[in-house]
Image (tube, rainbow, N blue to C red; front, side, top):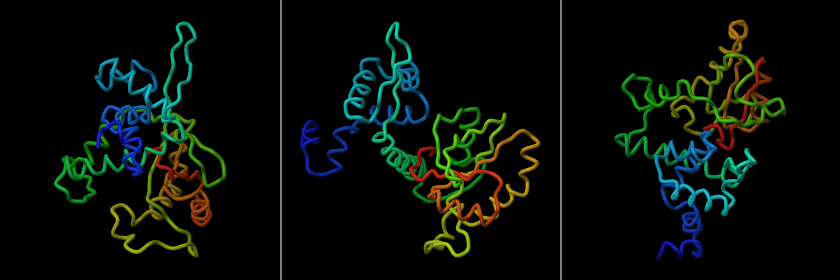
Amino acid sequence: MKYTELTDAECAIAQALGVVGDWWTLLVVRDVAGGLHRFDALQRELGVSRKVLAQRLAGLVEHDVLEKRLYSERPPRFEYHLTDKGRGLLPVLIALQDWGTRHVLGDGSLTATSAATSLESERVHDLVGRRLPGLDLAGADGRSHDPVGPTPWTVLYCFPGAEAPGGRGYPPGWGDIPGAPGCTLESTTYRDRHGDFAAAGATVHGVSTQRPDQLAAFAGHTRLPFPLLSDVDLALA
């Protein structure tokens, strides 16, 4: 099958590859999702030629993966932002990152460790000093929240999920997932120390991939004084 025929194929995977099938295109989506919205910033980060970048951006706009937003009228200049269709690619990027970390950079084993020499530790330290991209997450309180608080510091902790008594319960094998045990204790520890964080000028937010209604039940049961945010679409991830 020729590359130009992919968009006409009946297979959904082939059709998707017709839109984002080359590595520059996915890297553009990755960097826009990471907060780079202007042409020059993307070009510097990727190290790609301006011609190639312009072609990839035009293609992504044409397929409604990105949208252009005017930020300068003279001369006309645009920022590029993910559309709802583009945000649908975020789980794909997460899956590629996990696969690359495990099978390309790693030895194929599934681990979660805080050892100073681990890839996980290197990735976390590489995040120091980076700003979160602008986005809103649905809160357990029914309101939309920016993960970054209004205070000088924001403590953002992430957990797979936690259930209130009488909820749907945990799926089989839940306790075997790295990081899954202890989610309730983690949240209640932040609750018990919330006054100390507030006194230090820090906002506390908890983030999970659960739905807002599930988080609301857990937050009510544990009497959390800070918002729990739902990242069910993996926008923050």
